[in-house]
Amino acid sequence: MTDPQWYGGDPGSIPPQGNAGFPPPGTPGYPPPAPPGAYYDPLAPYGRHPMTGEPYSDKSKVIAGLLQLLGLFGILGIGRFYLGYTGLGVAQLLVGLFTCGIGAVIWGIVDAILLLTDKVRDPQGRPLRDGT
Image 1 (tube, one colour):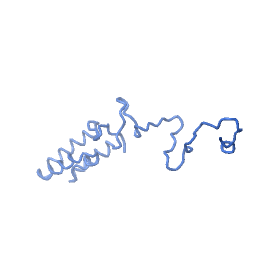
Image 2 (tube, one colour):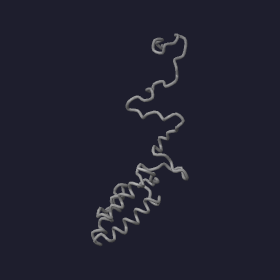
Image 3 (cartoon, one colour):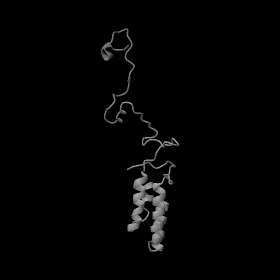
């Protein structure tokens, strides 16, 4: 039988059903509760694309584009490595070696423009998120 001291009710009453078996909101080790009036989607922690409804990637298009522009300073393919496209990053490095950097600089600029204008998705097919 249920112990009346456990729930503070009368022996014949039903214990409260609120968060039965779950820790209270804000308990360490659990995600913080959503602010009042906000909705948290666990399948899209970075939000959803407003037109398609697809969940955003954990990677930022701004950071990827800026890293790709580092090719102008001799660091080639870093934006693609950041996104997880290791093969393309290595290809940009090799093109840079074989063309003394000219081909990789052109490829890097074009690739940075594609990254910043939402033409590239992450390896899982999700659109890159805005901001940092």
